[in-house]
Figure 1: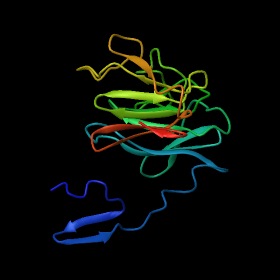
Figure 2 (figure 1 turned 60 degrees about the horizontal axis):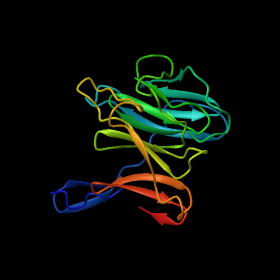
Figure 3 (figure 1 turned 45 degrees about the vertical axis):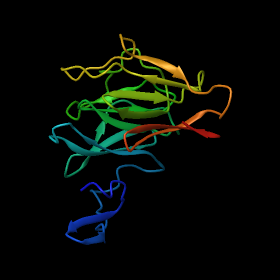
Figure 4 (figure 1 turned 30 degrees about the vertical axis):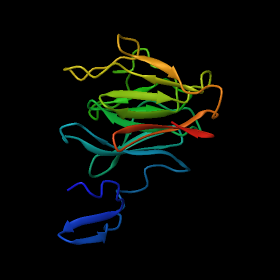
Length: 193
């Protein structure tokens, strides 16, 4: 059990056998024109909501099972948007706009769970906190939220939140955050922490 934790695009649904995952399916008509600047799937903790979310140009849409529906709130043009699911919200960052959240039911992006958050380009949930990095003023800084509380709330400026500078004198800027095997990996231009 759990002996192949990092297998991608492989199904293990038959005992003793691995097979390539099934193909893809087109969801409705094209959600937008031009370049796709962000793509994710919003899944709530209880699996009550499961929507693909995308950004084309400055507009975000989600697929409700039959059509692509706009989420109000334009993103800065030509900026890559990254998403992360946490505490029944999907968080979004792009380095130009303030951090945003969406609950899957309202028609627009909001700021719930973003109090005190910095403007960044990277996001990752890890061990009941949100982590973010990629701030242009502090490119070596990793920010972390408070621990999620019993009402599934976090802040970025409460007790237990903060930031750390990751080897600012060496390694370049933080370029990615990834969790794997119970660790949060911090990638920099010339280092991995």
